[in-house]
Amino acid sequence: MMPDNEQNPSPSPVSAKSPARSYRQTLTLVIAVLAFLLAGAQWLDARQKQAEIEQRFTQRLGEAASLDQEERGAQKQLRSQIEDLQARLGAFEGKLNEFQAQGTALQSLYQDLSRSREEAALLEIEQAVTLAAQQLQLAGNVPVAQLALQTADARLARLDKPLYLPLRKAVAHDLARLNALPFVDVPGISLRLEEVIAAADKLPLAALGRPAGKTVKAVSDDATAWWQRLGGEVWQELKGLVRIQRFDREEPALLAPGQDFFLRENLKLRVLNARLALLSRDQATFRSELKVAQGWLTRYFAGDDKGVQAALAMLGQLTATTLSGEFPNLSDSQAALRALRNGKEKR
Image (cartoon, rainbow, N blue to C red; front, side, top):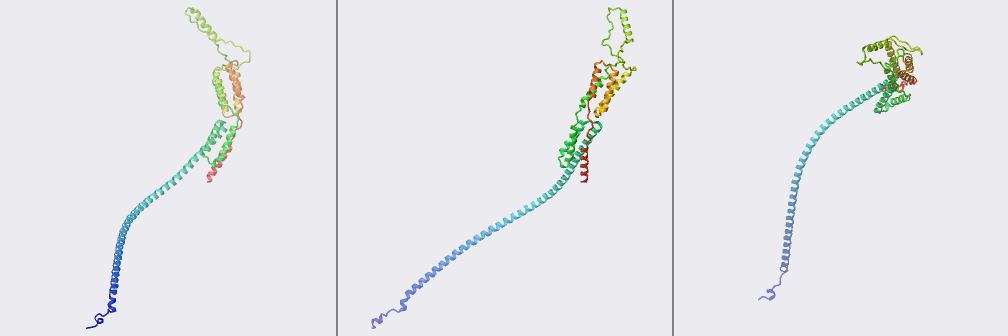
């Protein structure tokens, strides 16, 4: 028999350490599995995130492609619109050039028309000044000359340009000189002379006497005897053959038969000459013709007649009328017109 200590030998160190080792190995294995599982989970999570990222990226790529396609369509539409706008712009530029050419032509036409109107107005002014000078020098008609200068001044006012200021100043100066002339009532004097001319045929002559105011009527009563009517008619005939007239005053001028007509016509002509002298402001001729007419009225016409006396009084008043003397010659306006014409020709 073996001893106890030999029958129950004590455990070796290796056998004592094996449970701890196995525990450690199991723990290590568990940790490794857990690490593998954790890594797998992470890998799965990363894979899932990568898939999500790829999906988002694919979606973004699709959206980008869609946007690119839309952008290409928009660019194409934009290019089409730009080409359309360029075509319209070209058409507008062509029309603009055409309008500019038309505007230039219209402006040139307007300038030509303006110059034509200005030349026409200047011609009217020149004619008005010439008419005023002619009326003053030839007829002495101051009202017509004043009206002509006023018309010229109105035309100059419408032009309203500094170029015409010297001419307008000269016209205003000549117009002031005409307005300063003494007033002569030419129409009134002319009407009074017309009255004398109209009364010349009715004025009685001194040599022939005046007809009786009443004429003896023939007796037409049936109750009167025929011999009485015959006697009355014979008596009237005898009275017509004999005329009794007093010559206790200065002997009147005698006229040959039928010369009274020429006397009256010559008297009218003298008064008409005085009327023409009045229109031309010829003081000497005016007074001379009126004095001749007065002398004829005094010598050949009945001085006691009221019509003759009225004609003599009217002619005497008119003879004392003073007509204006020398008229201005409108030299300032004519000189200004010549200077303006010369200036325009030099331009």
